[in-house]
Length: 181
Image 1: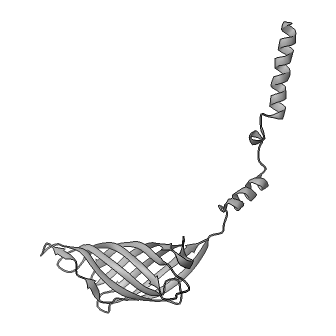
Image 2: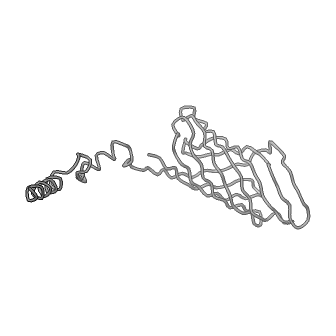
Image 3: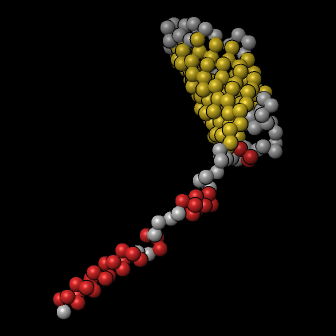
């Protein structure tokens, strides 16, 4: 009887070893795994669209606060509307800018804020919502911009750019790319 039990346990062990307990425990072939991931959308190709634009500073729409004087001034909540001119219709339009910064007596210092871009082309729809940060030195502003597309044709897209703005001409040059699936 003892031998029969041992034989039964041994056969059951080898049976489970070779057959497996369920379908999920079986290994998935790499081709099946790739097809499953693609069906779930995780293998979509990423498209990068390079663009350049000219930023023409517009009027200040909201005068924010300036705290301090002399060596350091804290600027908070200044707003304005800029015009972005580009061959890329996804960003060609009006940019609403919010500016904050800590500037010295010469107007130099770190700056940052938020922005929204509303494309002129109504077929694009949606807006870009983003943040920017950088530095102003000797009348030239240099900053990085990052934004997410919300709504319309730009839903889910990401924008990455750098800008150099000359404060004496109020014109900036933007160079960047849009990442989409």
